[in-house]
Amino acid sequence: MNLFILAAGTGRRMYPLTKDIPKSLLDLGDGSTLLDKQLTLALENDKISQIYIITGYKNEHIEQKAEEYNQSGNIHCVYNPFYDVSNNLMSLWCTHHHFMDRDFIITNGDNIYKPGVFEKITAPMDDGIYVTIDYKDHYDDDDMKVCIQGDTINRISKKIEVEKTNAESVGLVRLSGEESRSLFQRHLLGLIKEDTSRDAFWLEIFNSLALQNETINPLIIDQHDWGEMDFHPDIEQMKQAITKNIF
Image 1: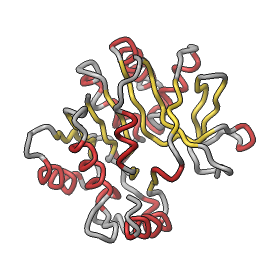
Image 2 (image 1 turned 135 degrees about the vertical axis):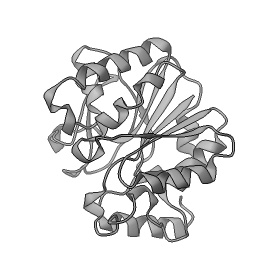
Image 3 (image 1 turned 135 degrees about the horizontal axis):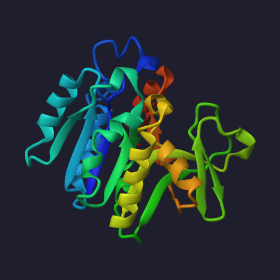
């Protein structure tokens, strides 16, 4: 199984902390970083064979960090030359030629997970498209919100009205089986040709799939099993969680 880590962004909302370093390499208080945490979980998981980190902003720092973990030669950095004028749909496009190698996982690079999350998403399951979600009592405007109809996801967007929201997207997905991987790749390649794609989140691929009535399976985790770093208060919350050995 391959793992794709999206880590090309400039982290503007975390400025000035990200003035000289990518968000995924900000110190979490114990000397570790988000990228350290993700790489450690991935390398401990015997189902993940190859790791691709999509870089952009201050890429040399991420490449140096990757080398620290790359004893087996299975970590690869892929540079997105459009990182400063595009969103992460373009980052994912930079690696699409690896989609047919084997089943794969995609994660946002600014996420942190408890170990059980990677175990769950790599566990044996039927072929298909799986999007990790959680349930909360309240959803904020900045949450990547999810609409679910029956057993399938039919929309993912920050723009979904709160009252129509069923869940939150974690930013972690799995593609299992050649047919599902090929379908995902085709929709990515179709979206990338559209004028609006430069500013699109990679999760727009699932909206494209849903419009064609493709099944998108929700994979549920607890809201406390992960975190994301979007704003300055997030890093303080992560530091506190790490001090308490939550992550």
